[in-house]
Image (spheres, rainbow, N blue to C red):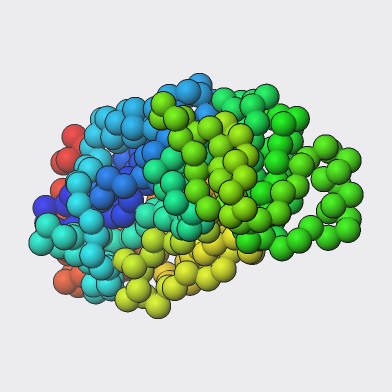
Length: 338
């Protein structure tokens, strides 16, 4: 942080893969950056993460711990806490934390992710991320060749069943509250030998801390070793309320997100989003990549601003603003031993 101006170059709200990846890139770009994290990652219930090249099978918490160390190695700071609100503050932003601290920064990157709104079936929440899953690419290998059920709750349920069929030929589509398959969908399910059962699921059967099946409203027990569900991702975007940035439906029809361009820039200048807040479908690797992309765009924006101020100082060296910018540059040079 620049002691003269009392603010960071960038405040990152959210310390998951997207936020830490962005902070790492910004630190390497010699930017002062603070990551504010409330310790509630989306994948916390999962024992391991998968599909992340060179980190496959690593516990999610281990990845975050390594990321914090790497960020700190480039001078970045990570503070535990929840960002209550953010607002414009002069030519930058102010973020109020639940600790009572107010953080000021030139740019704001929000990576607070989503909350998965799970189907209202007793037992699902307690098994979430274990043997109640949603992504075949994240969990399919671990439950391969086992009897798997797909809980139908919406129009995408048949698609989800056809996906999971790649990992097992012992698949049941539980119609539950989902719409009846169309004739074309029914033909596809039959061709792939996917059993379809009507009736609502009223609960899960657990033995020795393992899912053994689901109970239908008819009383029938359907033996299963895993249950695939389709949660509704709800954007955690309260910190953006003051900017008028509200979650909107995602183009795929599943959940909400904050609309932004391909770099994560929102409609509010100086405010970026990344990770699941921008794309609820992004896995850990894609989220980290989006954080790096946003960081590059944020740094480029800061460079453009720094250049404008340098030109102004050159043309009007006696202005108060120019003097402040020169002091900032001198302090920055001293900080880096120049």
